[in-house]
Amino acid sequence: MLPKEQLIEKWTSSGIVKDKRVIGAFKKIPREIFVPEDKMDEAYGDYPVSIGKGQTISQPSTVVIMTEALEIKEGDKILEVGTGSGYHAAIISCLIGNKGKLVSTEIIPELAKLAQKNIKKLKIKNIKIIEHDGSEGYENEAPYDKIVITAACPKIPNPLINQLKENGIIVAPVGDMNEQLMIKGTKKNGKLAEEKMGNFIFVPLKGKYGY
Ligand code: SAM
Image 1 (tube, rainbow, N blue to C red):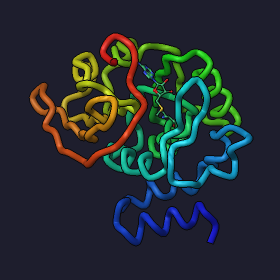
Image 2 (cartoon, protein in one colour):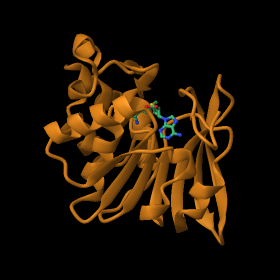
Image 3 (cartoon, rainbow, N blue to C red):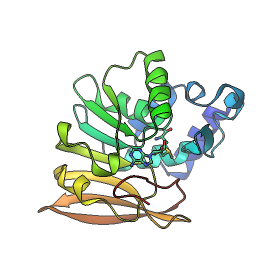
Image 4 (tube, helix red, strand yellow):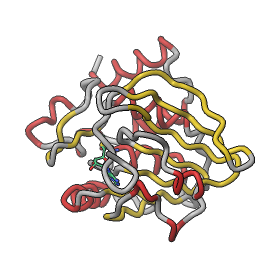
């Protein structure tokens, strides 16, 4: 079995990921495009891979778990904080369809450019990558149906809660720089109803509401 198929088998047999659409997106997007050339043989290892500038492409299991938690529907407008390589953005792009839109923010200019290049290779049209401090959200395109933060944050930044629609979902790793608890927050009456999804380790969120 190929490493990519082994991952799918691991997720489906353990029940970690149940949404067939998420598995379908994982099958469709070639992760090897998003890892550095000299690390291509590590594309389907279930661990984060360095993409330069001290940053990483998140491990495949983390990407699919977070994506499933977002409960993405076709046509959703989504904000991603932390584009990195653009891989997670590409997975999300499969689920929102042509009518959906993903706005993805990246604070490191070189990585924003790298992600734009990667996304272009796959001819993906429903993603807009912006070099921006996403800890403040991105007011110009708000409100969003879903928001995903792919870096460790001390708390979920208030501007992001404000930019989320009522009944919208935000998924974010919250904690200190050593370990974070993945939070799935659903906005009810202007506040987040939170579910805990277990512990993860991410690179820190920078910017105004980060570390
Ligand atoms: N989603 C990415 C992928 O698929 O490759 C992985 C993201 S990596 C774990 C976290 C990213 O968040 C890094 O690229 C980092 O530069 C970015 N980041 C950190 N703070 C940020 C901020 N305030 N606004 C936008 N991006 C930020």
